[in-house]
Amino acid sequence: MPAVRLVLLILLAAPLARAQAERPGVLSMRERAEVRDAWLQDRLDTLVPALMRRAGVDLWIVSGREYNEDPVLETMLPATWQSARRRTVLVFHDDGERVERMAVARYDVGPFPRAWDPEIQPDQWARVAEIVAERDPQVIAVNRSATFALADGMTDTEVDGLITALPERVRSRIVPADALAVGWLEARTAAELAVYPTVVRLARSILHEGLSEAAITPGVTTTDDLAWWYRDRVRSLGLDAWFHPGVSVQRAEAGERDGDFSSRDATSVIRPGDLVWVDFGIEYLGLHTDTQQMAYVLRPGETAAPRGLVDGLAAANRVQDHLTRAFATGRTGNEILASALAASDADGLDATIYTHPIGFHGHGAGPTIGLWDQQGGVPGRGDYPLYASTAHSIELNAAVAVPEWGGQRVRFMLEEDAVFDGEAVTYLDGRQTALLLIPRTE
Image (cartoon, rainbow, N blue to C red; front, side):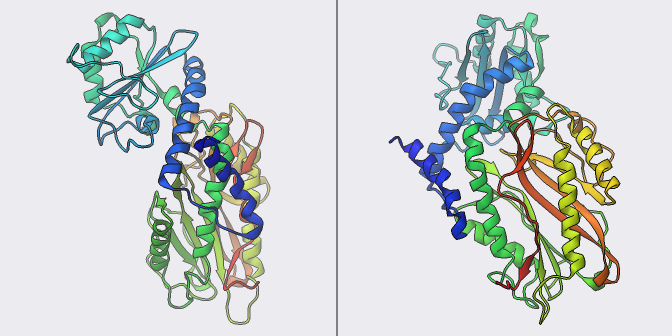
């Protein structure tokens, strides 16, 4: 059996261990490279032609230099390339029947054969211009965008080099590659989606381990201690965290937490009676996770969280339901946001929604569905439409008055990774519907 098929079978079998509550195994670096290179080949063969034709582009140039890579370029390099080599220029040309791909570089770049011999043409941009002239494309896309940072990876230096080298008659054919770059980054293939639940399950298993006696000693452990515990735990498993974990507490005497998410709470000792919140994410196999969960620290003699906290989490789950029901192919992020907020308001819920795409990046390319400080819509990024086979972090909160805390309003902040298949949203590894308890009562 080919190595890649064997590795994929290992990954696909990992969810079967769920009944035993086992953490999915982590592949070796060589196995990960085999999987990622197989995915890259599949993506290039299947996604790029469809995306170029959807965007009406017949030539796409992706360029970047070592340590200053275009975000799109980074996702097209073979797994053993951890950066570009000098200047790396990738070119796609669609002749209507097939998409030719080539690397204007000193080396083959994985599935991109070398199309430049410096002994024949010493000037790299001049070689790019020759390729363009030979194919005479009508629309030339480059990764420049005022709206999407991830589609704006071609620097002024690279653009100037390209334009200077091109014949004047074709310079006017250059267009921003927003639709191509975002489409490439946001689209998830069948092979990726088969494994993404395992990646999320791995992340959630680490998150849950931290929200337990394994990492928390009430009255001793601080929120900063727990954040650093996550960083060390992730590294011990051979993984990477793509952001420093967020950890905070809400408690009865602390008063209502305001809606300003621009700064984290000061470090605090985690105490019995606290509602603990964690924001946590990893990168594995090139895919990112972004999950927020909440736990209650039991007081002496308690076996369950106060009813008001239980009800508050249920309220946040209802906001999730209103949001995911609003997902529809072709709807913009702003339209989804407005629909979900209206449904939440009609349900008597005080909701704030700030959901984003996820995949190659934690805050990925695609439609932005609200920001915590922009609940009326997000110009530009929120105007982008929703497509099928895309993944999203369903991120939001519901503010609820908790009777046991004297009517204090508490924010129940949740985030779960999910996939939209064109018809419905499915959580990649379920979602939190009950508060975690510390210590556990089972």
